[in-house]
Structure formats: C-alpha cells, structure tokens
Length: 468
Ligand code: AMP
Ligand code: MG
Image 1 (spheres, rainbow, N blue to C red):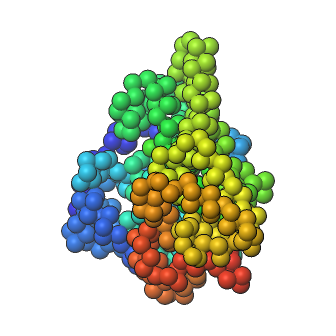
Image 2: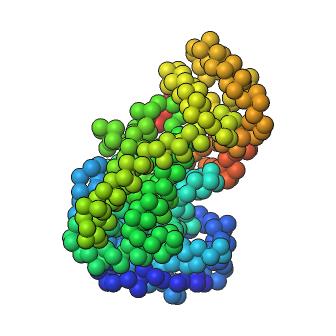
Image 3: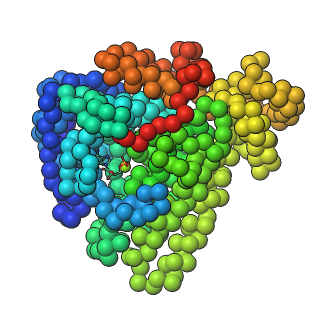
C-alpha cells in the first residue's frame, strides 16, 4: 500500500495531462530502497509485485497518474513547452516525518510532451541517478531520491546503439521547477500563475505570504544548494531552468559528475561546449535562473515598476548569499566553523595550489593535516608553506579536526566507478552497484578504501553523455 494524498492532480487541468505509464514487456526489479520506503511509510510486502508497480505495469491503488507541464530555458534559450516527456507522477504521499513527497516514474513511456523522444530511459542514466542521488542524500545535500530501479526487458535506441531500458522511481519534495512558472508567465495565464504561486508557497514555504517572499525563499534555498554542491566538487551539468527545483533540491542527474582533480573550469557534459555549466560557473547560473524565476513572478504585480525594483534587489543580493554559504562550507573543510572574511584568502590560496597541481578535490581536503596531504601536490614547498599558515590559523580552534572530518567526505561517487558500475549492470552484474551503494551510505567513514582512490590514467572518464 502507498497512502496517496494527491494535491497536484487537484490543480486545474491545464497544469498536466492525466495519463498512465505505458506498460513494459518484462519488468525486473533491479534495486529497491528499503530505507526510503520506510520513511515513506510504504510496506513493500503489501504492494504486490514490485517490478510491476515500479515498472508502470500495475497502477497502485490511490494513484492519479499524470504528466506535468512546464517550459524552460535550455542552455540559455527559451523552449516554450517541455513537460514530462518520459515521466509520470503517480501521486504524493505524506511521509513519516509529515513531509509531502512526490512519487514519480521516470522512463515510463511517451506523453503528449515527448516531442521527438521515445519516452524511455536506458539503464545507465537510471542507475547513475539512483547512486548519485542517494550519495547526495547521504552527504546531507538536499536532493530528490531513488526508491526503485526496474529493467523493462525492452531495448531502446541511443547514440551508442541499442541499450537496455529501465525505469527509475524518483521521490521529490515536489517536481515544481522554475520552468513550471515560466510556462504560465510566458503565455500570460495570470490566474494559473497565481494558483501555482500559492500552491508552491503553501507546499514549500508556508511562511511566504507574497510572490516576493517566495522569490526570497527560493533564492536562499538555491544559494545554499549551490554552495553545498561546490563543497563536494559536484558539477550538475545541465542547470536549465526546467532542472531548477523550487524546493531547493538537486534534481535531474543527467550528465552530472563529481570532479577528481580540482579545476574551476571543469565540464563533464559532452554537450556543454561553451562551459556554461562548468564547476565554477554554477553560482552565476543559479543567479541567472533565479532572475528568470523573478521575471515570471513579476507578471503577478500591478505596479510593475515597484515590483521590478524589489525583485532586482532580491536577485542582486543573491551572489552575496552564495558567497556566505560557500565560505561557511569551505571554511569547515579546513577546520573553521566560524569563519571571518580573512579566511577566504586562506581557502582561495589552497584552491589555487590545487588547481595548479591538479590535486584531487576529495582526497586533498580529506587528508589535510595528515602526513598524506602533500602527496597531492607537485609544488611541495608551496603546499608546505600553506600548511604552516593553516596550522597557525586552526591552532586555537577547538574541534578543528572534527569539523574537517564532518565536512570532508572520504568517499564520493567517482565518475569512473559509476561508469564501471554501469558497464557491469549492462552485462547483468549488479555487484558493483551494491558495493557503491553500501560504501556511499556512510560517506564520512571510509569503509571501502579502493573506492576512495582517484582513477588511474586509463580509468579517467573525461565526459558524460546526455543521451539519457
Ligand atoms: P532532461 O534533459 O532530462 O531534463 O529533459 C529535458 C526535456 O526533454 C524534458 O521535457 C524531458 O521530459 C524531455 N526528454 C528527455 N529525454 C526524453 C525521452 N527519451 N523521451 C521523451 N522526452 C524526453
Ligand atoms: Mg529535466
């Protein structure tokens, strides 16, 4: 049983299309997240055949399946209609913490919003999202989560050739995006925009009484999120406004990756030719996305001049919010829980050395203050003098070590391990998936040292493909 409590389906019909998932040939359950099921109050033994339910062949009682409508800026250009082209929202449930959560099948077949697509997903990206989203959660970073992965028994065509199809069950605080607001704003459907604004505020920020309050809340959630991503070397890769969640959760793990060697300009996505979504550009893009959100909300105001002025001030305040969140996160990584403005220079000089020497992001921070730290640097003298300055700074800081250990994961889902895991899964071997999932559950405790190692040159995966 899933105790559905569906609020999105009660919104006006222009917000979505009611539609069942398209059944699949031979669903096989590849992974099921018992821990998350428990949080959701789902008892899997009461659900019947899990592969049928999470493969979309059996609609659970109480579901109101639908595809959501939205638009979005993709790589900066506005696409006036996107929507769930291969996802179906089964409905919502109130979890055991009292939080409303969406349960969505991704890869569940064509919808009126599929455009040219086949409505499906292949196994690789499904397992990538499963592993990386659960790793994010374990790292304490807001994210959608993965409840199940099902192989469909159908092959689908991608650039690489025929590949095994799969469906991910994604759990989210909601699937409201900046693009959900954009579609109604651009169409001039003010009543729908107002309904959506009220719905989003009540659902995510009940203290927000006006659209400007909502804008402020989302800016602040996004600022925290971007700083959190950067603190673990995460590159989202496709920060389009349709992949920018109103709740402040990380959503849409397409061509995402964690960096190995530190580089502010690092890009993994094979389609991001200009580096729009490069590691170091993520703060700028978050602000840009919030400016698009603000532009949509402006439609709700009669006194446009006053509204523009207020919204502009909120957007202009955002870089400082990100910087403050960034400083808090990175200071903790070097053992300082209450940073001052001066600490910025100390952090920056370490990052400069790391970039110059191609130091591994995760292992450098994890090993700071240990005899292994200098190993990441070719310019040992430069690092040693940094380490002297650092030691002096934290000499009187109580709990510096504990602060560092709590801020610096020992293990992150490295890209080459993800690729190896996918290759194995395609060949029918789920052991690497299980191994990664086990180690990533406790990222601040090293349980599997091999998985913490940076890739050997032959193992490096320089790009991730969007052919999801
Ligand atoms: P994404 O890059 O996954 O955020 O997707 C961007 C848009 O393309 C969304 O509207 C998706 O629903 C749609 N889309 C992506 N892949 C497919 C597919 N295989 N079939 C149909 N629509 C898709
Ligand atoms: Mg998307």
